[in-house]
Image (tube, rainbow, N blue to C red):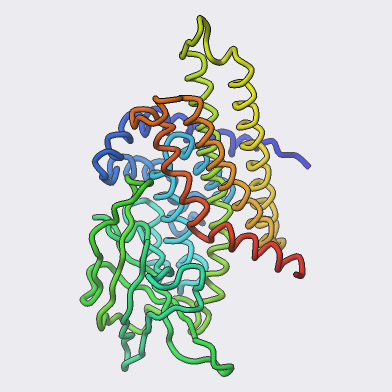
Length: 382
């Protein structure tokens, strides 16, 4: 077993690392303070091909793999999580459902714009009253002639209200299954469709430079051919998408955790107390050593999950383990990095303050830590 990167993956990692440090780092703090979306950064990411990393060249992708996306997410999150989550949601939640389940016509219409970064897409799953209980979906879609009529609402939807958002895929109840359970399907709703309303952006604790909205659908009509995948297969489709996305979120969490190490080492060398750099004290050294250990082991966990996925092997449990462990240690490292910085760690001018605020959502989004434990236990036969 070899965890060393190939030349191609190493080159990608280096280029994204340089981009994050040279392009993202100088501007992102201002976007956080003003709660603005970094369009100029997203455009440059599109030119780099980051939005097309794991997609086939025939649709405008880069012909890479999902592991390449994870490497890019890790390097971006070492500097900033808002930019990283914008990429993660755009690829694994926005474009991937169309790539995995779309018709040839749907792929031809939407993928070129999404894979170039010219447009973004959202994934409308969560609702105000249903988070982890996706089976409790209340949004409904009724087939009326050759149109779906959608009514309902979605909550916490990333990339759903930017100036370049092209569509949202929406999970909705489209009928009743033979066993009496809800029949869930996924439908593409283009931005600007009458009856589709995007609420003002949330006031968030973290990820304040990313785009997140509540969505409402009031007799929203879209063509019948906007059905994504098979009718009644929406539940199975989003489970597949979320399993993959958890590996990506794990990579993002590792990036944040490693960024905490980076900033702590830098600060410990510069900050003096009692006549010497605080990095000379064993108490600080042990904190940083523990932080590095956690980031390293979490990285190995998502590497393993990604390798299994790409090999076509079962990976649900490994993805849950990677997401659970990486999000936990990201919160741990953010807390310790803030402690190392002392009072300065509570000031927004230092990146660790941003890391601290950004870390908590990693234990919630794309499946809470409790859900990950449930998945792991069930996969073990319990």
